[in-house]
Amino acid sequence: MNSATGLPSVEAIVIGASAGGVEALLSILGPLRAGFVLPIIVVLHLPEQRRSHLAEVFARRVSLPVQEASDKTPVVSGTLYFASPGYHLSVEQDRSFSLSLEDRVHHSRPAIDYLFESAADAYGPSLAAVLLTGANRDGANGLAQVKQRGGLTIVQDPQEAQVATMPQAALDIHQPDHILPIRGIGRLLVELERIAC
Amino acid sequence: MERNYSGERISEIELRLLIEAIYLKYSYDFRDYSGASIKRRVSHALSQFECNTISALQEKVLHDPMAFMQLLQLLTIPVSEMFRDPSHFLAIRQEVVPLLKTYPSIKIWIAGCSTGEEVYSMAILLREEGLLERTIIYATDINPRSLDKAKQGIFSMENVRAYTSNYQQAGGKRSFADYYTAAYGYAIFDKSLCENVTFADHSLATDSVFSETQLISCRNVLIYFNKKLQDRAFGLFHESLCHRGFLVLGSKETPDFSAFGNQFEPLVKQERIYRKS
Image (cartoon, each protein chain N blue to C red):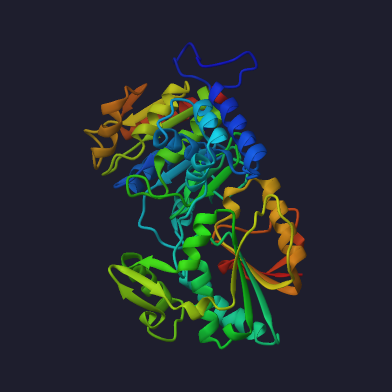
């Protein structure tokens, strides 16, 4: 715990977003400096297409290296990862990625819950989880699990979210460490990285 | 905090003990499966079996083979579809079939065939290319109930409607309905498709190679394995395949980072079609 800010020292950031998520993510991730050291792993619900262009879209607008997370490859610091459409994404105990085709959760594959729950196991208190705008209830259970394992939880202020359902569903079952507008979330990530360095 | 002296959580210890118990008692080896997925499936099983702890589930399945068979259904993933990733099957038709045609007889191994969707897809493709009569297909899986279902070849019409569109995009030459009879909301697939198919129990974790093959299809199976077990599976495939044989994988699977990375070369990389080099 950093005494000046009350923020913990984390080793990874996971983010879940659904409807309205592309814009929200660009606002948060766009300003991050090149050389940002923490890995950021994102599940963004999209229509299931064979090949997504998410990584390309974000690579043009974000200073960090961007990749689709590949099965059994290690989580590398300073990289922005996206879950592949059609596959659930998990982080293993050895901090490598695993993909799977289990049933959809909240009609979604990838599911935010899968990423958050597995990352909570892999990182424990060294994880920050951010849940953004969306029109379903995915991510609420995962966020509660992150909190239970001692991680830091952040929910986008539903009043500001393009679609309030998803952040509100998380607030219904769990009191996060921070409820923030997009700008505040961006500043918090910068602060988390400063502490981690 | 739920911690013991060594810092390992109790549920992690219980999970490892359960997996070990299943291996010792029933010889099903999940020890080198991806941890996150197994953990999720076991916690799902806890609610199905109305057990509060993994230890309680372990006691149940150790003493009751029927309970184990039920648990096995939850530990394996019978999620599949026919002509999944149509462009993959189109690439097999266009790039692999012309080369397969040069063999007088063909052996194909579909490893981890689950409830048979991949088997029927392959059989239909081979029939349309005039190869089915001279092909033997070995369709293997660890789950006997899945194999039974695969043998029956009965699929819900609701799913078959989605498969029809896949089939057409995969370069299908006929009407998909030619291959099944619809009745009571189910599609019963033409038995003659399976005349040369041998369904068999085989584990990529514990069994060895049983035949030389020209093509191996193992799609969306390896993602459930850790690196060590993936290496074992690639080793079996390499041993089974004939010189320049074909290996086709799921859309997110590759031999590239395995111990056999330089033993396979991509034929159609984007469609995960490889050749033994």
